[in-house]
Image (cartoon, rainbow, N blue to C red; front, side):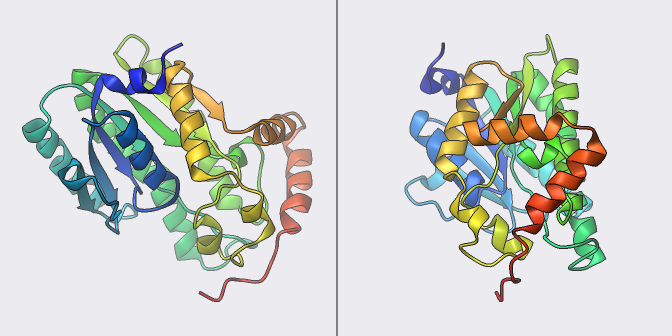
Length: 272
């Protein structure tokens, strides 16, 4: 079994979406510690502002909900990599994603469509544009799905369905990539201590957030799964149990049960 340092030794570059906070920021910090020679390309609206990485961390401002910006930044990233890091494997981490909380189409239909754009279209578009480079140099793709992928999720319907897409798409494309030198891993975290719940419209410090895993725990388990050659990982035993239980019943029953559970967390909207 390869150590995490050994697994990352053959990579020279990490390209990540949404590295400015949460799980994405933890991916940058942990992989940078494991391989001191890695350089990073981060795609997000905000600069990660991670200290002590200097020129190793390169920020490419991008609104992933806009297809034209994704197309443009993909060219910028590939050009930069070919010039500055011309050899070695590339690790692509599609981390960006967000959700909303409430009955559809709350809070509004444009946000529901933006969830689809960021969580699904941008992931497929950017991966497709970067894949020729990964095939040429070898590497891997990590896609952040969710335990919400395993059953219909009332009150988070669009978000949950988008993560089902991410999970199934990742597993299918991973099979297509066999023998190419590139593989794909779907990571399914449950509740995690990030800004996700506030952006979704929940009160800070809500029960889901308090019971969630730390970002570093999720990232460590994801990297362990990558080192083990897995195509899917659900992080944490509680999340594994939840995902297993949610995937067993017929979908209509799973939807009814999930609705009752999620409805318990219908807390007041965050004021911020």
